[in-house]
Image (cartoon, rainbow, N blue to C red; front, top):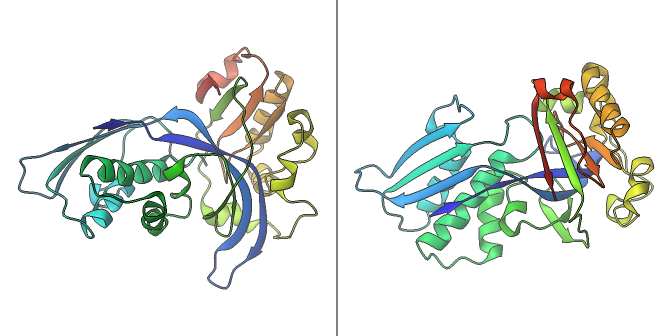
Length: 271
């Protein structure tokens, strides 16, 4: 069985407050985009529980530490899963704020459920996905949602960007979670992203923000430059996704790709 785990972007991100457990409460809108990895499973004759191979962007960690295998191990601990061959072709860049690893894990849960006829419903799969990571559950139903808490509490929204074009640029910049949060000042906004997302898209630029941008842009001014360039190229809305370091712009028409962007990972598509 073959599937194509897709990335997401964040449309707005407010850091509301620090929690007693050390995490932060946030609010954001997760929107799926058609930038995909490929994940395949098949029954295996191996004496091992799983065989894991990968291609595409190199994965330089032990397979047992890979989030896909963590998802496999979790389901295998709850259900009778026969030896399985797993192949992941990695296309979504790491450390990009795009949820690529979380998508891979969520799709592993969904594939195991379908391939081995485990009978789980969406709620059950989401309960397993949250044990893997805060944003894993969003990829189970894979719809635009307003997210609260640590990013795992969802409510549905009406949002359809079909017909618009997206350009996504990921420089070789790594932003750790401590760095991302170190310069932020949690606060409750006057208006929630859930309310603002219903504004016309042309009004998002002045109303919908990613709280990580202020501190991260001061440390990595190249990201601020990319955002400006996206607007200069005609983007209706441009922002950083999550805690970075991907920058994206949403356009009415397929834009010309600047030559300077091509030194980075770059991807464009119709939504």
